[in-house]
Image 1 (tube, one colour):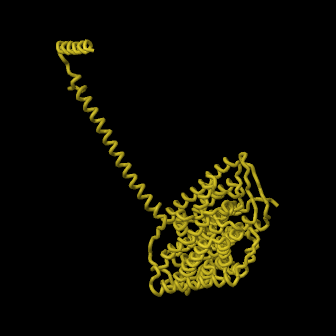
Image 2 (tube, rainbow, N blue to C red):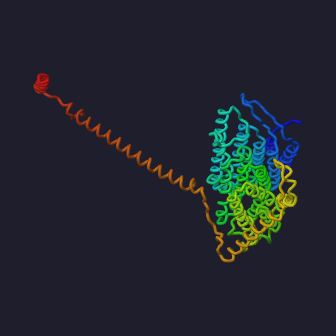
Image 3 (cartoon, one colour):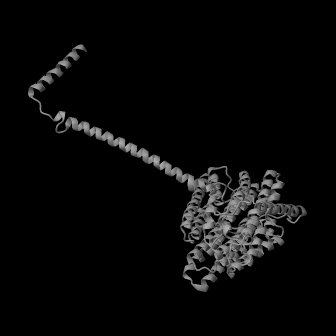
Length: 563
């Protein structure tokens, strides 16, 4: 068997998309992730492909159980995303989507930092076209901000790799740690792509501006690639526990007041990433298994939720909660699939989120991290509120928005149906997921304590939402712009630059005026003494000149005699 990085299948295959037309193009788009998955399945842990490039040893393929988990789910997500978008006739977007998904797979199986960097930057460059494909001014601006941030992440990754190679002589992508300068730079690079607090707003800024189908693909790969990279390079890093716990909490408040439901899901994405980051920080086998399984489950139910909101946007032209409602009459299948995604993300028993998220909570409890455990528990209630209830309620069941539309296209329904089936299947039979995790699993999610605790949490969260709605205390859904921390770089920093520019211009003009005034004075003095009518230009009688010469000579002689 020829061994190569499976990401190449979608990367190279994607380049053929523009030259193939009609049904053949759709068949190719669907076949590429299927072929990639089939090849990934036959890869065995321990397989490796190395190459020498300018005397640097690169590991183009490194297969182990951690990489395989992400390899499987990335290909599944790619197939679902392509099926969801198969009705579109946009060869540029389809090409870039294939390259983007293939680059993410290639990064997962990269065994060295240089190969990782190449794939890392390829994901950034190709994915921005999924945002620009909306062809609006807002999408263009959001895409530019997204590209700058993502490329910046790659630059930090490359700088860290160079420093590590200079210090150790190795480019291997294994455990890195934050002890060295190179490790710190790469940690920040991963943190940007993982949307750490204060580095996160590129996500809410860009994802909702992408196309209906582009957002579905974006939500599955970029941030989960970062989670994989953290699990590979920084497992057990203490600070990740606190970063992850913070990530689970703060998006809840912004999601509650957000009107755009795709932005609500983007904040929810931040929240769910926090559970995974916290699991990486805990670093135990149970926690890392929980991170891997939650990444697997999350990609499915988050894609399902984005697909349902994408279908709503596709049919109604809006995703604003204030303009929606009552759509369950027109789009019953989409509403049903959305509810499955909502129950999965809320970690209802018998749904995928329950069997993965509970592993991380249990790992935190086993390490006696009770404050962290409490934060994760509170965040779980918040998820139930803003994604488990708010998304389906305001889109399908709240006040009637007056939309009378068709059900989503069949290919969208099939894609949502596959994701919903997997969400339920994993929840009912978690052993299939547990069997592919990096470490041996000795964990049973369906214990009496787990189930009762989860149901109590969900019921009380639901009652709290009902109480707030009935009493009018729930924040009203209204058109608004929620800047969050990106207020700093979208308002504050431009204002500082503008004010700083005014100061610089003012100082520059003052210096110029002073310099010109000085030159004018010099010219005036020179003209006064050396001009046509100046003192030195006049003619004097010879006697006067002799008088002055004798006078100066007398003064000189007096000074000489006195001295």
